[in-house]
Image 1 (cartoon, rainbow, N blue to C red):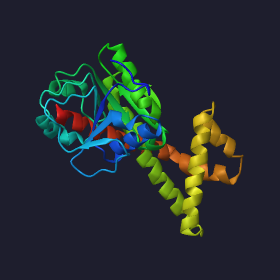
Image 2: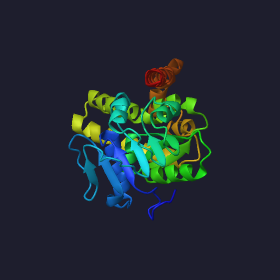
Image 3: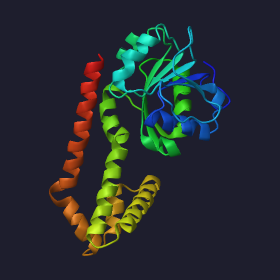
Image 4: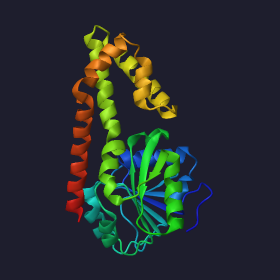
Length: 270
């Protein structure tokens, strides 16, 4: 498998250009991938970067070098029915809950299969992408990592069974962070701030804190303690969040619910 000048593996067919597929696509183009190397298969009318080819059905005997599945898991079998015998050299799937064995059964001609779990900040190159490939095709793994590197942090997962956990943490995580930002802004407004100003302050606070946490050597717990002087207002607020480990228990329950749903989808896909 040869890599292009941009580090990507040959001709790419992206199936699905919705929220996540579209975010990945736009980031690839922003990172310098040649648009003509990418074809999007989507029955709708997605907004695509100039130069990217759009198809609503596959031509006969069409086979890309790399197939990226970015449709909903429940749409997988419908797509397979329209593309019998599709045999890419590399198949990358971001379908939550669909295991490699299920993909291999549907695409027996694929040279290598890699599961990926990106999150929405890939749109700005600040995402997280977890990868797992059961095979020993080192060249395919290099190609898959090159495909995902422009999107943000890339982490290989040791066991496929951990995908439910990583999906709950980093895949679903932005949704939980956005909900926290909403709650933080509403709490500020409840203290008397104008709602629009509280929203701006909450967003900027999360942005700066996130950048600081990402670049710090210290743990988030240590950083929190640095903000909180003894007897001060931050410590008083942290005492509420820390009481009975309520926040940690809530997040464990939140991620467990997401992980269970991933496991249910995997069982359905089998």
